[in-house]
Length: 229
Ligand code: GAR
Image (cartoon, rainbow, N blue to C red):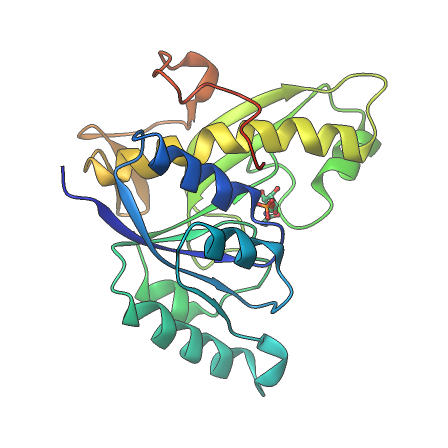
């Protein structure tokens, strides 16, 4: 199978990027990361990319006069690598409508909540403050609405009475590392599309997001505790 060319956008540690790198290395993800681009020059994920031999670029958003100017430059950088899918992996920037429209149907994001609940920041603390019993993570197509695009796949995490935001975040992140390679692989296999604002999977519109727990195990994809994460 030809490898899906992707560009990964990050702002931080890049553990989700690492999960993609590891899945590719294990032969479980038929993709090639053409570049990793960070809006923060100090993002740890840039080192992870370089260690894996992937071109890594910092495009510092503070050097730009406006969001539109930054997004235009970012788009030019991304398109130089000709990706078929743009993967937001902890990319903590609001995106302009033009940018989102340019990548419509070919940009996905991972978010640490069971969307549509808890869009935005500090999701783990907000879940604890609300006394929720369940939390999780979602992968969705990116649309103009912040964290509001149609959800593809989710994983649920039970909230423990002893949890704080850090312990909860760590368990959610472990699930994120299982979710993201699987969704990117589906896209690579041509099983996933965005059509008329809906997720299509295996030729049918999804009436609700897929749930990781309900999927049959695919060897290797369900492993936890990856090295380097
Ligand atoms: C992840 O938890 C990701 O879901 C979140 O940032 C973290 C990045 O971790 N993204 C968002 O909150 C986007 N709204 P990582 O850099 O270790 O992959």
